[in-house]
Length: 417
Image (cartoon, rainbow, N blue to C red; front, side, top):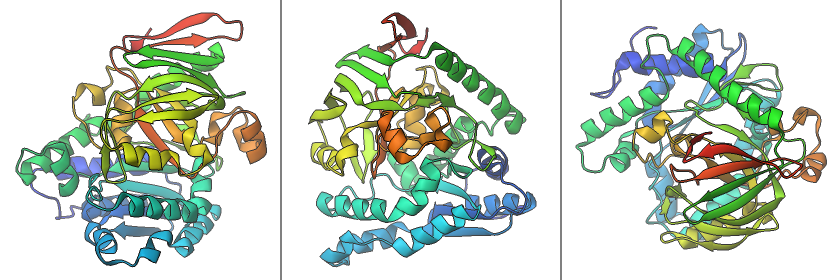
């Protein structure tokens, strides 16, 4: 690929180009003639340019980038009218939904400052998020039902790097974050595409074992945790690459270390404690501990950011229930990096996790043929949100519980048993 001379000092342009290539070939598996809708922070332009180049080289029809800017976002909170926080660009999301319905692929580049809104009114943040989630539904449905091939990757923006490495000069922080992204995304290997094929094979083997076991529930135990997560009727485990409804095999997350499925929204019981902070809505929520009863959160605590946590679970009825449970060994490369990325794409791949909110229909046997009503009847959850938070560590054990009540060791001290 031709050199594009716009890379910050300390970021290896060859590895950035490899990341773009992996995003297109492995993440999306973009098809000849297929359009691409691409969203990104303005600061991620160097990666977006390379993604566009690789997409067109792969035969893309039309690449349409949509950018967000942190200062424009802050301007709304500083100067916008109160009424503006109940509005969102529905016209834009309807257009995106139409593009996906017509066959376009979707790529998101993450890299926003995770603490951007930490000093803003949490009530306005919650209102804006709710309005945006409501407006986004026409596009989100194509993603959550896996109707299209889609993927997420990341770029080391200065504002994000300063949060991960607060004690370093900006150039050094960006360089260290870039190196961490390249390692987690496997683009520092001699043949990243082959490395991803091998990694996918390993994740597929884990998912197959879990599917063969047909557990009815998982029991998590550890410090502050005694949680039984029932699994949805007809659930199916996935990990690594998957085939979207349009027939394209893609890797939705670059990087990924998880195997995941759909919990039963009405069969979750007990206490669970977060093992890592959750960066959400510009706030770092720490020390999360919640109690589930009948599948719903009935008590919620946090040592920091508790008000934001409670607003999150009040988004709608489904926000108090689980839409995903995922297994990640403590020995995962992201966990072993010792970094807190303040970014769900990375932090969720450092530990076992659960997600509040919307489930994925693909995590059901024959999920593509199931109606929303059938998914709900089988235990799938519906919500405007999908927020992952980490509950795994080297002190957490997991047992699988079969239909007959037999207990099978799945994890011991954070590792596959």
